[in-house]
Image 1 (tube, rainbow, N blue to C red):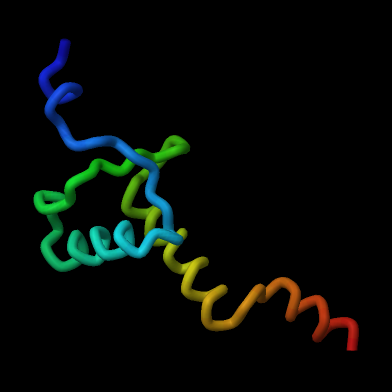
Image 2: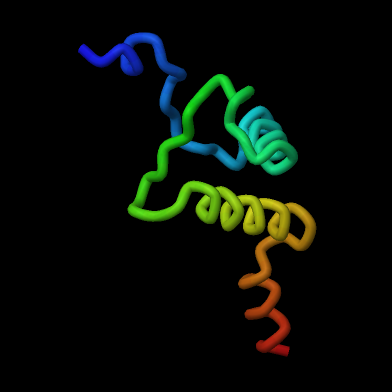
Length: 79
């Protein structure tokens, strides 16, 4: 059996709602290294991990600041 499987960092999905996950990604952005991250993030689709996390963070913070923009857009167009 592979040593990395037995002794490596746990592999998890990035959860934008989880503050600890966002902190680990912030640390990665400062150092450009996952060296201090105690987990490995998995990409659910085929693609790039960093791009996927950035897209999720953009959606998270836009919703946090402005709410659901599509709902506001529909209401403004009905008026």
